[in-house]
Image (cartoon, rainbow, N blue to C red; front, top):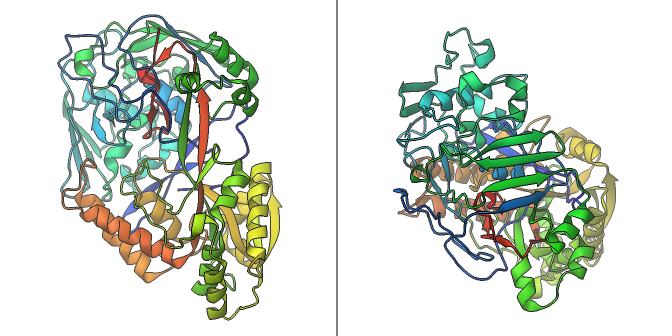
Length: 613
């Protein structure tokens, strides 16, 4: 999980991206894929008209539509009409295997399906192309069975070979360079690396030996190392089927072949996209997609103010980026309570902004000096610095509420969340610094980060800690905080960062941030350089419980939940990371848009459920 500087308000053309990279894991040779997200995202619906159940109108479906969990803005089963989407920028790629953007992943569900997906409004995995979520006794071998009747847009059958071929495309060094590339480490032979299908000497271009396709309906993965969260990766665009005959390499993004309810009608890169119904899609094979609109039109590269104005006037229905309406727009939007509920949705982000405390830089090599900071922090001042309660909420844990095994912990409670200066001073005395000390804080140079950093400086001055700000542009900031030697050489004791999970489970996040055996000389994600034997052992125990609970759907004995809660408590007790806030964001929608609800698995609304009236 990668730290991110606390960014300012969304800018035109900005995508919330996921970069996945492989870092050593928590149990011996085990490995973790770490999703790195550099743009804050939203989660958890806070407004709406109440629970509902958007369902497909097709009564012939033998796969029942699943009920949405949580509030829905204008629930409806009405079909027809044109959904009009306004975008500040084009997607990074409409090729599912190449895309690295949250909102693009969510929109690609209009025309692509994967082995697994998520129950509407939840982070629970279910079968999509596959009949269900498999289990694995060793977290190495994973077998999926495809549903019957799956078709591409031309009516040809979707087979296990098409899914294998799609995954093989991720191996091509020229086609895919970031994002989903990380999963190749679980499937590749380090002594005989697979080059991807374009250089595959096999006649059928299906030479990757770690994936078997014994028949058209079965695909089996043999991982190179155990990974209990493998099913989450099969809910990503990596498992989108691609028919080899239709693959055009780098040009595939201009006309991907549909396995979902819509297909490309026209696309002009950077300008517009039009989707129409895929008549070969059978709702009887799909437990999630409702396919309500007849047509979807997306206009791109529009100024943000123009997008908001079009939505308010009804000329557009939804903003593709979902990074929030402009403050000026929200001030102008209807203030009537009924209209507000009908046209706005506010969500609390999965991004947890936090302070990392460098345990190798004095005096933070003393846990009591770190705890002094943890007790003193005024989280409400951080909420205010970020823009107020409409923009942020206080956070007390690193694992955000949408994630599996979230635990409600507050190891440093204070009245109103304003910090406990008396307790902080006691910790200072215990660590031998009763008068306080000077410390350097690395921070990104955007306005929001500067406001938050200045609030920290003011708070800590109250206990005698003199914070010296080191403001850096984004590149310099990351270069510094990802290089432990530079942090030590420059005496950087604090860094203001944010973390966003790439999938809703804590394994990659907490192992990345806190496993002391994974501290790297470069591209290091354990910013605090925390190396606590008790934490390392707790991560091992929790990760093994994750492998046992490999269905990712339930933990009947509570073993995984208990172990992850124990790991979180130990981590917070080290005060190597101090949670500050979670972002909040408010988006607006046209009065004609239906079935608007938050999908925490994608940390955006569920574009595939939207309808118009």
